[in-house]
Length: 132
Image (cartoon, rainbow, N blue to C red; front, side, top):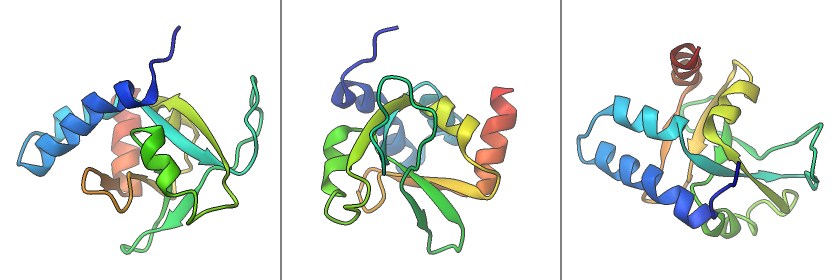
């Protein structure tokens, strides 16, 4: 499978995020997220066959931990100064994220950006059930 460039891959998800912000369907956003590629920042070089990954996580204002993902590499690179201990990035399918994130984690998409959203752990659990 050929992976699209991050900027191209992020366009559909960003459109779904904007639509949801404008009152659009959260189900449409969930579907777009599940079929999108996202970029994660990592502490280690993932190499061609990553075995163990240490992705960037944050504590949200709502009090839960969240795995940070970005719709494009450009948005990811803006965070490099805030998290220098995560100098590597990996583009993955968003549904892969849901398979590896622990039950106590939410997901923060483009934190600090106008086009972003946060999903609490309960939302991640619903997405996992929906995908099953």
